[in-house]
Length: 363
Image (cartoon, rainbow, N blue to C red):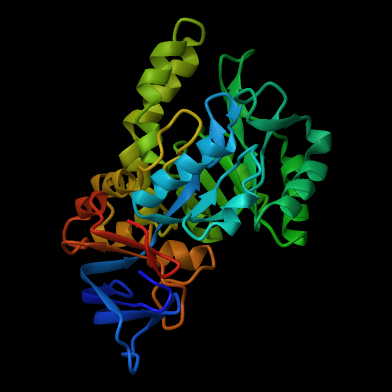
């Protein structure tokens, strides 16, 4: 499509779960609901249009052993884009991906800087590995580097205990979260287990990744404080394999991981039903493939979240949470078109008909 061409999207435009329009126009890379006058060069796309999907836990620039070369990171971003993901919250990466901001053909990335972990308590090559007395300093550093988010590793396996354990004492996380908020950043944390969650939430954390350790007594605290969760169920599906690989050395940890896996759907459904905000994230990067956003939405539905709410967790609601527009008048034209209504069957998300990014058809 040329710079002068106008894109006409016909069929059904899902501006919101109940706000359905018959068409939109893309003029100068922006959404318009008024037919432009005097247009000769028009390209038409038919189908069901959604705002570009959101992957709220994705790692562009991260490979199995840490940072990757730019060409690899580019392939990761393109894979996500071609799956319909046009907005990414990069929940921790050791790579500098600012070059993506200059590429109109790649998804927008909202960065959380680099993971901040306890010494020898995370995967090698991924994080700043520090002790509690340095946490405030590093949180401040990553708050300044990121795009309004900071990522902590809230728990990991403690080799002496042979099981998952909190990474930080309560006082350290209170001071660190207060510093991030002072600098205008929100804080999220990787948490698999139960015993780090209460301290993090009471310290003022904004979001928890995975949150497999949520229990019936903790869920009301999350709901009361408005702490969001990003369950990454496509990643939690790997827990049995991880447990099998570590069972000989850490049998207690392996049993714990299997237990968290077995109750994963009950955990997510219980949180959603209590009013905890739930958003879509895949944990792509590292050891997990990119382009899995449709599978994660389907997993939320399997857990018992209604289809329209699972869609919102990767479209309208997710964009609002991250401070980005959807398909409002004048918004950047980032949208995905499908053959059928995704509200009726979210599996439609796995087969985009057209992808429009910054007003241009890219897929």
